[in-house]
Image (cartoon, rainbow, N blue to C red; front, top):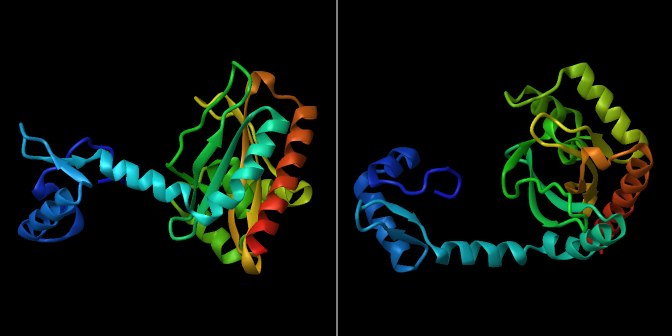
Length: 230
């Protein structure tokens, strides 16, 4: 229910989606309703997520160790850089990245990318920063996904550029109006866990800003890595 865009769901619809018998799903929905995680719509008999679910989800997300350790450094990046700073986490099974929290820019004109939505690694600066630190087999798998947004030679060029300067820089795509910058961070054993990023309105972006903000992300990414590895 959380992963799909509909506002409410019928029992048979949910049963088909999860591959279970409608009777089993109906019992499960009753238990979830008793716990306050979903609620039934009296006029239709359909079910939807409740405020109790959102409270639980937000509380759990705020306590995630990576988020808790990274947040002070994200705030520092936002304070120094003045632009919207974002924390992206890497989902290995999904071969995708997701912005999980943000610190808005101080400027009246700002760009606010969507949170809690999977983004293909080949289509965002945070994804490119993450990809630059992954092994070759994972690179091939990420490129092979239907959502891959660039050609193989262009992706190789982008990743070489990221590795060379330490951060990814991606011009605004149609409909986004934001130039994205990102640098990855890692956990124990050097495992890539995510990236810190800036979203800068295209009209305010320039090469000098690119260099200063990019280096700021590299520095904060290293500090997050150090915090995660003790």
